[in-house]
Amino acid sequence: MVFLRYRLPSWTASEHARHKRADRLAAASEAVHVAGWSREEVRSTLKIRAAVLQDDPLAAVYGGTPWEPWPPALACERFLLELERLTRLVKDREEGQHA
Image (cartoon, one colour):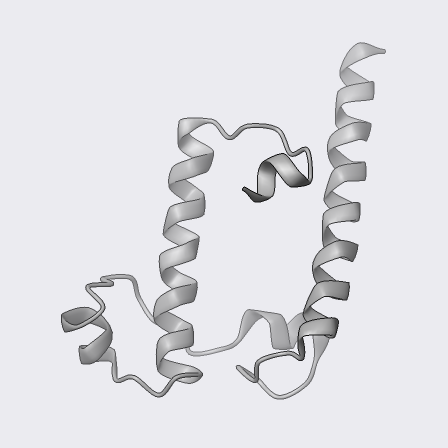
């Protein structure tokens, strides 16, 4: 479980629901743009009803070819950098509440 490994705080029910919506949106979009499924196949076969994004949101941040999978080492590096950024943000917020 990722949250245990990285010592992330538990999600509220609302946060969990938002995560699941985002996960389905990503799965639908990747199925179409990366794996080559049609939108209809995503709905009928994969049973994902989420919309399919046209634009790759990560291309706007990192550049590169939209929807092109990253090499594992690059994905790991980007994940860990973002995790560190978010961890600092949470820590700073918690320290601000205790001040």
